[in-house]
Image (cartoon, rainbow, N blue to C red; front, side, top):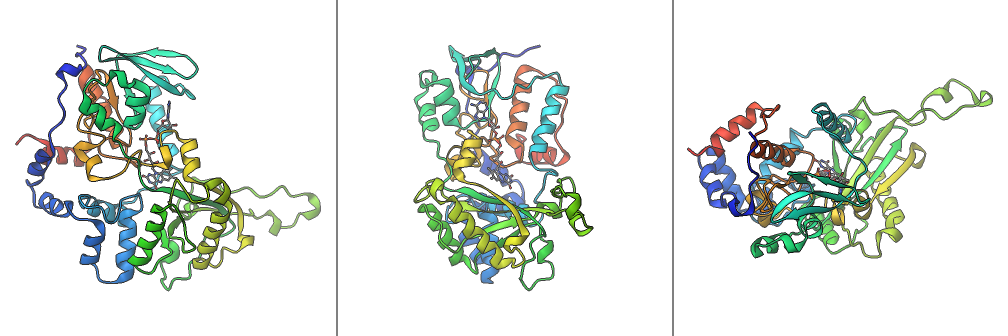
Length: 421
Ligand SMILES: Cc1cc2nc3c(=O)[nH]c(=O)nc-3n(C[C@H](O)[C@H](O)[C@H](O)COP(=O)(O)OP(=O)(O)OC[C@H]3O[C@@H](n4cnc5c(N)ncnc54)[C@H](O)[C@@H]3O)c2cc1C
């Protein structure tokens, strides 16, 4: 049986934050996480750890995807992020586009169709109910369900239109959405050899991620405060990974075409063996502008990287390309101002408030319209949580028998923290 899609009149926002607090108190672990909750990363790390380098490295790990080190109310993410970077960082073989391709195959296998490229510029709504979408080339697709992975401003203000946002509190919530204050600048390099770092640590060259550029928390904060103010100083702070050391799926760069005259055995060796990147926090509104300063900043990055990995001399670097916060936005319109999580991680934009209390269950006040991207609960990055929850909500509302099931850990979490008792 096909269920009615929830219409605005029957729509209820999800449970308030108080419910979450009560449910978290069911376990010792939950209580401990709540204690972290109100605190900022800087205070927790400087209180729990003594050595300046350990403090700074752990703070970098927690904040590397954009968490503000001084923001109160986000402390529950500290254990999660430490675990993610230290023990459970995952790498998608061949690059994360492989994951998107695998999900695409699932859609096709289940009888779906993917239109690409197909830019949507309007979501059709009538009497509070979604009716379909319109693409920039004029094509229309009519549907009783539409899912948007874009942020609330793009979904509701740009695509749905303010005239359909009848609830003034909902409209205010959508319009108040805040993007991240920092973005990323990346230098991607094709190298003749993997970086060899000069740190006095036998394992340093086997690390998946190498963090560099600071000696203590003050150095780190100085860099981040500079970024917040729109600049990048000479003391660049960032991290690097040499993907080819970990991923046998990545193609090695082929040898150059060799003419018979130059043919000798050594020339047959591939010229470049590795790809690696250096990534750092960077402002979208860079003083002087990215167009004028990309080359200068790229050179600074290479110099800084070489400072820590002296073998990366110019002759070992075959090719280099860059991605600025502006080019992130150009490549992915969903990442406005280079906001890689589609919106800030702040207490007012997390948990049941991500993207707002009206849409965090993926359902929205517009009947049949669902939100499913990084701006939704549980948040951004390649974790798949928002899409998974939205797919479940749609299946439930349409009475579709799901052909997927939660993992054992998710079942346990649901039983402990989400059940009514
Ligand atoms: C340089 C960089 C490094 C990152 N590093 C990491 C990392 O190490 N680990 C990690 O977990 N995450 C990382 N991220 C973040 C991660 O990629 C995002 O948080 C994640 O991709 C968000 O997924 P999403 O599906 O919600 O949105 P997106 O990946 O932004 O996908 C939205 C899609 O919608 C398309 N779109 C936009 N507008 C329209 C339109 N009008 N019509 C049709 N389609 C449209 C976009 O082209 C895009 O394909 C990184 C991001 C960047 C840019």
